[in-house]
Image 1 (cartoon, rainbow, N blue to C red):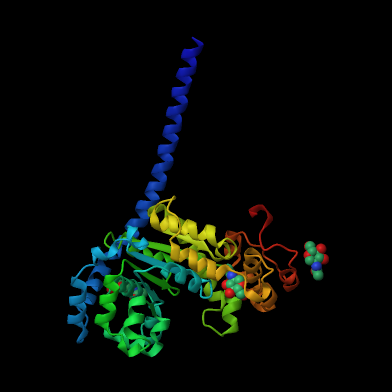
Image 2 (image 1 turned 180 degrees about the vertical axis):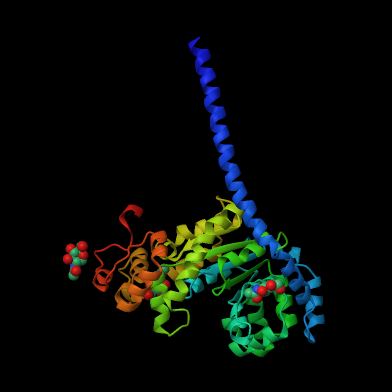
Length: 383
Ligand SMILES: *[C@@H]1O[C@H](CO)[C@@H](O)[C@H](O)[C@H]1NC(C)=O
Ligand SMILES: *[C@@H]1O[C@H](CO)[C@@H](O)[C@H](O)[C@H]1NC(C)=O
Ligand SMILES: *[C@@H]1O[C@H](CO)[C@@H](O)[C@H](O)[C@H]1NC(C)=O
């Protein structure tokens, strides 16, 4: 009798739990459907744009269509570590400039058969009258993942110097420092021959990538990079970089942080986020996590070029060899606390409060507290 009662109550509890879970699930499911639906609503207009872009004006069109017709060379993909990845396309999106995207981008590109473009959206920003918006940035990213480069983009690249725009061992060995050697067909050919195409962007918003993530042909992975905005904006202020007004940049950063969990729900294995502070303090662990994400395999060990790069870049400098790697990184990471001006500190803390909360970082409230290193950067409960 007692046993029967136990079995019976077990079943009642189990079915109740099942019911609650299914209701919860439905709720989450509805949220996702709503979101995907919203993004697919303006997809039709993008398809139209896409079609237009497939036949670009000017003489470059035949070069481009010829280049795009041959697919990536599968035979090239053996033996290289990136060849084992299921994804050929990685987008590194940093919410703000000076957030360590150079370091992380370089790390990503530290493999044979990687083709890496930095900030192609700057072409829209500086070379066209359009500026960077959702439509044109999605289009340009799509085309670059498809290895299609318009002649105007090449002109921009010549003006900028390709070391600032593209990293590719093949291009380096072919062009030997002559930036005018780069042409649409050459870039397309090299891009197509590589296993992985990496693009770093700063002026795009995370929500704009939904379109790209939804495209099964792109098979894209997105890495969202975040850093304490006080550090980024302090660094930008030293070089008068644009984007350093917290009143303008904090809302984009907050928006990206709000978008992230939604995207992660819809595209579980396709988006991840990296915190610069983690990368500086625990470079190996953070790189390993990132690699597991890219490889979709928790047991896949770091590729040798990544390890080499980390060894070279997280070692203490020769002069202060008594510092441990971790102390070096930590001191480096919090150096902004000694440099930031009172105005920038208070402005960023005012407009970016949500971001600091999200990161688990202390809001100092005064320049004295900010400089006082016995006050931890981390809020206690987060440690
Ligand atoms: C994007 O394209 C659509 C359709 O062509 C247009 O309605 C919309 O205004 C564009 N948005 C921007 C920001 O240009
Ligand atoms: C450690 O310090 C050196 C020299 O300042 C620097 O080049 C290196 O990037 C630092 N490491 C990290 C992880 O910040
Ligand atoms: C720094 O903070 C600690 C802990 O709150 C405090 O005891 C100390 O007086 C502060 N130092 C200065 C110079 O303000």
